[in-house]
Length: 229
Image 1: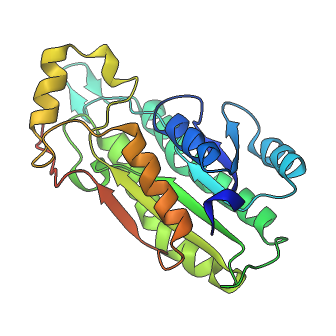
Image 2 (image 1 turned 90 degrees about the horizontal axis):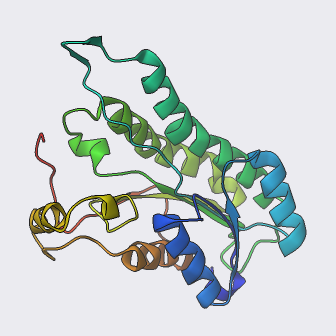
């Protein structure tokens, strides 16, 4: 899909990686609607009416609470685990199913493509650290649904790809000291620094523009493999 033809909905698009995606889509001539805390069905419907359809969905909203499975204060709060899975995994799938239903009405392009869905997982899906059982499980679920969703939607010309970023310089990182940020950056084999949001946005745009990318999870992490803590 050409970047100037993009009509996107972006969850979590008001800040961090999602904001960088919105800015890049618009910079390249496309249209993007930011979905925040709202009813996804109504928000996607509204975006479709404004843009004359939706052909791109980028899932970048999520939460990352930390808690050990069990400790001196007892077992992890099950409600915290459930909420993390509901926001990160069930929320992602809800947007996928609603956006895909809208994309079915699109006229296919020369490749027969009607739309593309880009999800955000995390390297925690593969290298979850201490205290990340809920977060890692939710992101592993996003990785796990990528191929079957791509297969489900293949006859309709809709692609599904997931990006698993490593440590990126987002507003969440701004709360850490310069020393901690430098240490985190130094843990990346190369480039030895935190990832930039614009690098994540560039990868999203490449996925959108490259029709052969489908059913795959792409690690965007500078060869980082997370230690236990």
